[in-house]
Length: 413
Image (cartoon, rainbow, N blue to C red; front, side, top):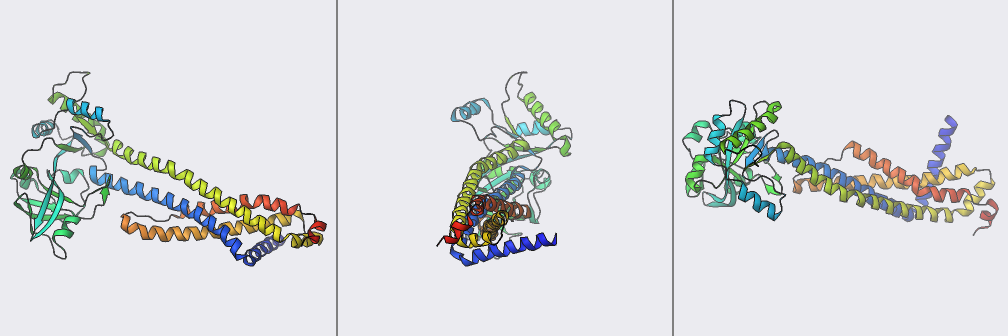
């Protein structure tokens, strides 16, 4: 065992000596592997970060266990399907919500939401195109709103249409730079609302910022903007395990409310948590389907480059290999030495590629608002892929080196 270890160490030393003797050639091979491995690490980490961020944003936008009743909730419709759905589905009104609440029987929580784009002002500053939402106090129990300071709307404020507001971080930054917003007044539609709470930074969902939100009581919203054309109703079972039953109850109650006969299509839509998560998964799969071939092609190109550089190394060392064969070196020793050289180049390149990928991910995580840690599992399999690429790239040059005729090689200039 000790003898084998000594031989292996000698082969690695000899391979390193060969690389150092021709740093430009070895560097080109390592660079090709670094680009390939770095690309794979960036793609895998980026997809993972995107998926996790999208799931968090989806949970914040819809609630991790919540479902949504609305006139139309499906976005991937053709123009004709959308027109048909608009013609069939009726708006969801406050009367519908009251009917749902009357027959909830403690099995479903409801929170109607109306949304409108509007400018918000305070102390001479303006935040344009904010997402102003009128809602109920129960939304706090249904969705993770991430209240950072203060509180959410209370039931008694909802009942008396109190002019209170909870605002997102983009609104805070624009209207109250360096100032505590709590207790201050923001104006929406010419009416003043006292800030009673702020949200922590939420990020975005579907490319739309969740930090532009202003939450006010639904009745106060109607006083500013009038009754909305249709409401979205967020719903959730008090016990998450009862959510399927809660969804069935909402569907049956709405069909009863609209007097729909058995077999007749629903005149409303329900978006379930599984559908929201499925949308995120489909996007990740589509990106992954395009990213995988790119990574594979980059790795194959790197293997070709390392193969060529190793062949050049074998050609330049033909006389040296012949002398060693004449002095008793076995073909197996020559093969393993060449494989060690190509593997050393590949692993060095892989390590450099991972280091570059980690630096790029650290730089990109801030501007993109994503958590992009380079996982240990990614490092391990990336280095494994680099080592395997080195073996594949060095196999043909190693076989060719082992078959060199010592007599012909010694005569080689």
